[in-house]
Image 1 (spheres, helix red, strand yellow):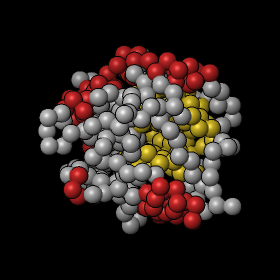
Image 2: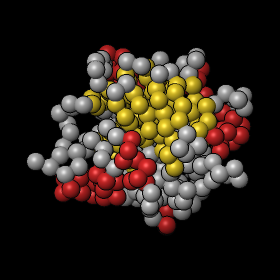
Image 3: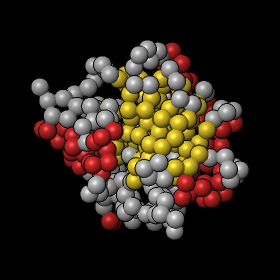
Amino acid sequence: MLIEPLLSEEALIADIDAADPGDGVLLWWLGQSGFLIKHRVGHILLDPYLSDSLTKKYRNTDKPHVRMTRLAVSPSLLREIRLVTSSHNHTDHLDAETLLPLFDANPGIQLLIPEANREFVCQRLSVPIDWPIGLSDEESTEVCGIQIHAVPAAHNEIDRDVDGRCHYLGYVLKVGQYTIYHSGDTLRYPEMEDLLKPLAIDIALLPINGNRTERRVAGNLWGDEAAWLAKDCGAKLVIPCHYEMFEFNTETPELFTTTCDRIGQPFAVLQCGQTFYFPNNSTIRKLA
């Protein structure tokens, strides 16, 4: 049985449309590493995977991508998206079956990518070579009033092209007065805390599916590592992601939640299709 999103399709769209961020910021987890952010500056979509492309691609292979959670929303239903990100080239972060309908439904949308991936991205999506906005680590830009700073991601290593530009990135977005860090897929690396702590992160969105060599895919933070990274970089809140999408590459949030409770790191665990309001959502948990 598939895990059912809390809200999906038209009901999720109605929830997004009706929700008023006021002076705060609203987030919806859309599964895997995908989040929709709503703020007065507009709607931002982070690394969406909203199709069954990987399940179809790997069907009848020795690495089937069996879906665990039902699709939250068809990308063609999403409207008013000003910016969409891709942190790296893996299909669950750069999916043509998600992005092309999204582009059609949102004229004027902008796409943020690692500059090192420009040629690959444009070929996969059949878009002009100069259209996406590209960054490498320690570079910043502003899109639609959103300030964005790029930091390296290690998946499993910090991988650079011949010009020294990172193929895997995390994005730190300044959305109004709030700073949101979306790590992309990453392990922890030695200088990570030093790069992130000065950025005064309000919300960290971190993967917790771990790193098992037998899966034969690049890995991510374990739940306890995500909790400690959030704590060490001073994040006011951490939300886990990148789990309950594919049977072969998932973990439960239990290690994450027990570690957060033990070390006093505020966190929230969302159901796919669930909304979260920052800064004062009642579902935030922290050590008393």
